[in-house]
Length: 261
Ligand SMILES: [Mg+2]
Image (cartoon, rainbow, N blue to C red; front, side, top):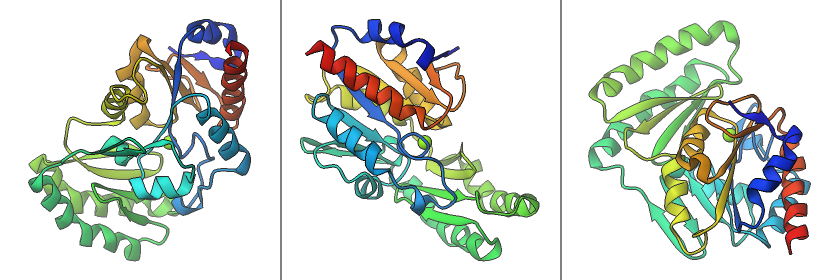
């Protein structure tokens, strides 16, 4: 079980001591507070500057469930590595990668789009997001008394495709995701990036807040440092209680980095 990071600073320091560090950051709920509408999740000026400064002394990747172009635009810092769609696509100044989900899964996703888009009309507050290689149906803004009917409609639409097994359902924070059923996730993407020149040989620090981030904690294991935001997590080494503590930790990392130089 994870330990509270801000009470384990010395332990964290000793784990990172003498190592080249790389930083992998989730976006929503990690660099930003979770908001009602996904398009309102903006990184604060302060956080953005902190990430920018950190990127001057260590390789940094943003690893998000959002589409790649979306996450690049939202963070807006040149020179970083970005992975979108839970790692299905990645880009940096020195690499690009698109995981091929296959034609059959592509067709299955295409077939679901009209009906999932229709949920927006049937249920006020539901937002359908087409991320290219995956879909997210957000229900954060749906009145709770409508959830049951919404869930029934969602299940009715997706059940046939899910039973065929080419796509699968993933749960996110008040959102359902339909993704190609492939053996690729944030963890695999982080390992892939760690094998590029930019990240090779570094000790990865991964900060996330969601179920899908746990794939990365598991993939890194004791070879990295995983930090889960919001609660204890079995898969992570450390946790932070609140999103605004991420900034505190990043400043510690920066200080530690400064002290080591
Ligand atoms: Mg998140």
